[in-house]
Length: 251
Image (tube, rainbow, N blue to C red; front, top):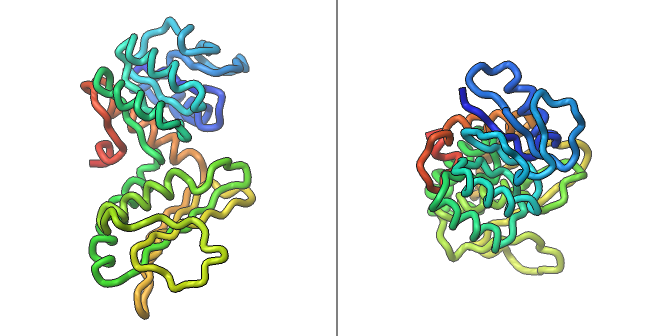
């Protein structure tokens, strides 16, 4: 039985993971961490991870960037691997996470969906072929009206996957307003749409002369991220210190 601490237990995805694991005999949430304890979880919830006195095999984190420093300190002190899903980390925090991976196993990904991580691999392969053939690369991402950041971390990760194949001299362009010129060859356009209750929609468009290839992923519910995080936790439990990603999970 893999024992889990759910960091961000009362968030939407934390609650989805709680529901999924309620029927799983191989993995159990033994403690949660959240600023507010609603008293409805089948496990104790602590206001701060520093207060948690229950040992676990892995931590799943869907919290807030302000809580990540304490999370990393706890993981090192208790030698507990972390599936780090919180986005919007500062450069200092990213550096701290990188340093911590030398002491404890950490899996970090811009998107926990298994489908999205497969898409990243396909985008990398497609860009390597189509870039040489003169295709332009554009990314359009769509999310619900409540999403705070733009573009999404997933869109940037997809752009990184394409850029890895196209070359470091390619630049990201987020806004062409007021620019009167032909599209430069070595740029990747990234556009963000915000509206309604869209969970997550990403299109990577390779536009060539007289043909267009589009690779897409649509998330219809947040459960895809929850299920991916669970598989990541299953993979990470017992792993040696190091920095891992979802590409390690999907193989």
